[in-house]
Length: 349
Image (tube, rainbow, N blue to C red; front, side, top):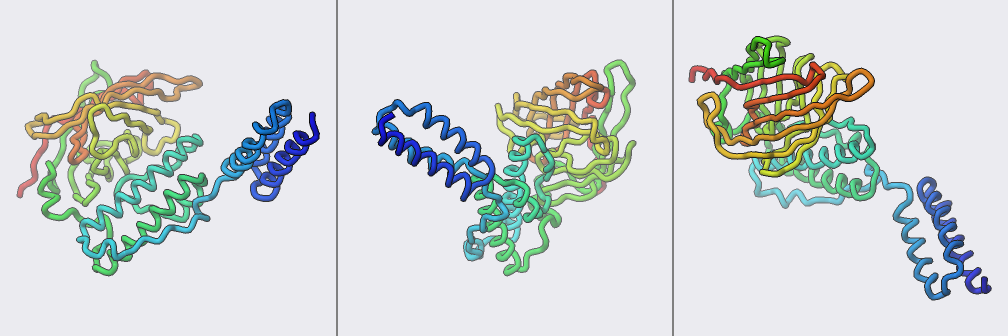
């Protein structure tokens, strides 16, 4: 190899080594090793072709090094004055939207790493230090820091306007648009299999909040039931089927969803599901008018030392998240269920 080429190759190696040793201590070192192998392989290439590689290799090493932890990214400041003219209701909605966006980013990172440890619903309060500290990558770190800055500015604006705490009861105008009122009872028919006799499964509305609805499950296994306005079940009594992050707001035709369905209290009973919205529009169910979304579901669940298929459909009201129908088919008994809304018993007004 001519002397000038050998000198340039050595310079590239030294540059990569400095990046790996001085600025990054993990993946950058692997990249530097790969970069050295690449330079040796390219030794016969003309000197003019190697010069651009020197710059590219150094930049690539810098970009591919150890990820910036979100906790170390200072939140970009947002001006509370931007929200000075907002009503408390609008600030509260935006706080929920910001936290939901942060939860979505963190959940996507968890899915990519296979951890899936986050299960927040709309209306939940995000604990920012934990959220930032455990999701490290660059773009996600910057997004989370930006959202934290916006969240803090919104909270400052809310304090200045003496707004009530987030998650308070839904405004009267918003509650009036819901298909339910406090005290109403939703009576479903449950069947574990087509040939088995049906059983009643009843929810009574106990609270309507701006982003959530609370119920009391009056039939076994009895207990508090809480869901968001997309239809995700945030809390449920032990032994109940629960899906915390399967559905999304404003479901549209063709939209794809994904998430876990679990048996509350049993970490081993879990089905990983994907779905697609196959129909939307007005429909009368149990003598009430709803704006429905029909989502076909498919996936699998572990059973013994293998996996078994789970498929079916879920039908929800797009405005309130009220479950209208759930059909699940599987050889796994926990995920074989037909649940259908039969009637709504309206409480005295």
